[in-house]
Length: 217
Ligand code: SAH
Image (cartoon, rainbow, N blue to C red):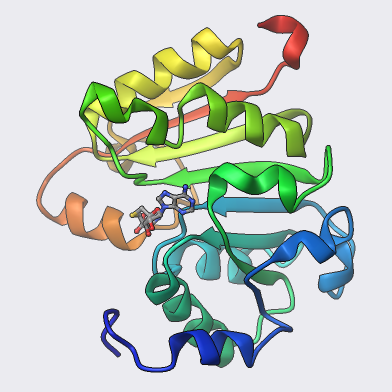
């Protein structure tokens, strides 16, 4: 199905409240109630059409996943996948990642994924990058102490910026990959953008960083 101009997308979303929310503030602090088992919660901010989060949820039934995306037409593609898979450990949330403290309580999230986030290369758009310090502070506010941020991109500029941003923020960089697909990293699950860019021969960058708490800043 085409992503753009899907008729009735909003109505479709509202028809499946068991899988997707457009305002998760009712579940702030209670996300575990939306899953069949209480287990760690991993979120992805900017899930796009959802290949990563759906395949992760299939591969790791012992983790509860929440795909967060602000574009209706993108998240409905994830919903379509979930309507086929009916994974008990996958939930979707249609909101802006900048507002996550409205939807999650302190320490409710165990891990944060960012994949192929929009690079926003112009300096005046720095605040929109999902690794800008205000976003890092938002993730940290809802994450457990020492939670990890895992980030993949093909964009060298955004990767360099993100390495600097997480370091400046006071996070510990645990590991960096400069060519993920030619490394010994196991269990990689490709996103839609990752398939597209790596098929053109572009290396994929990846980093894992740890939140250290605000006293470290
Ligand atoms: N992760 C997917 C999509 C990458 S495109 C993949 O790798 O294939 C980046 C996605 O992030 C877009 O779908 C865009 O709508 C979403 N996005 C950008 N800023 C966001 C924000 N502040 N909150 C939630 N989603 C955001």
